[in-house]
Length: 351
Ligand code: SAH
Image 1 (cartoon, rainbow, N blue to C red):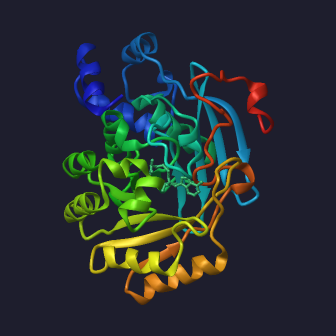
Image 2: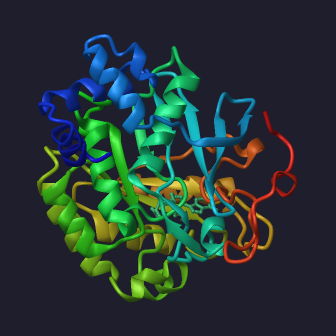
């Protein structure tokens, strides 16, 4: 539940607001899902809660583990729909990549989720449930970072994503630092401006092209919010981010957006701004129509950015042996409007 709804819920049981904090600690910090074990609540309240409330984890269809430690959960969200959550362990951090929608409307040209169409927004419980489930599963490892880079466009599900984000950084709940919670967006400008007021966590923007002509094709929402408008919103957002930079994601597509001229144009857009670039090798999927740039092209692109004073990193693909890499989170559902979820259809890897 969003925080304010939880307080109202306890008020409806004639309980003080601090009960909300107690429950949040039990569920989000200690991962206790049985009211009977919540020993700082009175016995009566525990009994009452077990009648009127439900603490339930998402339904897991399968869990897959990659050789590199990456773990992927396929979750049944009902109505024949499934979404995915991915855990990515690294030497100094452990990142959870969560989904905010079943499918996506934005239809970026190179993204497997977009190809499936859109089914619906996930609820606050469905999004938060991914974090609780994964926290329990990967213990004693602690999740240090959460990124909204799974299925869906988080800012298109603004009403549910903001309460989730607030709980992720709430000291009584998950207690992550603002810098360790990242919302990734294809560029919904009005919501970026609202987010600055509502919950200014780290922002990643899927830029992928240095000019409108190309970006119109790769990221169709660009036709509504073109690059200049988007970057203007980014620079304004960065002012509320205690000296933090905006990350620009740039998927490397062979002979599409990966030339030296593209790199120079990109540097021109970002020079002198609070920006860093994350180059993402394209993860191919059947029928995508794109190829990943060559290692040489990626290296050259990266070097040009650095030579122009732009901080850039190259993302190392993780979990690609279990199709957990960016843009591969298809849930193996070909068409969200017609295909019903079946365990057989979803294939191997079930636990
Ligand atoms: N809708 C949000 C977040 C989800 S996608 C957004 O657009 O930012 C997370 C990142 O993966 C985005 O930068 C997206 O453009 C990128 N991505 C999508 N498909 C990809 C693919 N096949 N290979 C590599 N990156 C991909």
